[in-house]
Image (cartoon, rainbow, N blue to C red; front, side):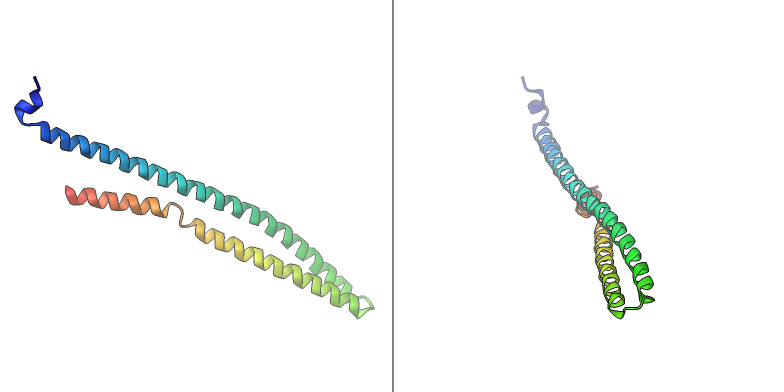
Length: 131
């Protein structure tokens, strides 16, 4: 004997069961989205660390060559000075390029988990609307 059918609750239980299944699927989708965004965040963070190390090395080299260029400037031959200044300028340009790449990545890291936050916000607004 089916008591739910006799009490007229079979439809109500079916709707609740469907809502729970749909909620479980939605939660699984949100977790998958969060996992994908976490992987993306880790990749960008690793790039930021690598570029930071490269920038540090290039900055050190640029300062070394800049010092060398200043020393060579006082030597007798003007060709040596020109070459030293060109090398120092080239390394400085390379440092600026790496710094711009670091700043670009840092801006992208500020938007971590944007899709997950948006989806959870939409879900919350939908739940509040139904209440």
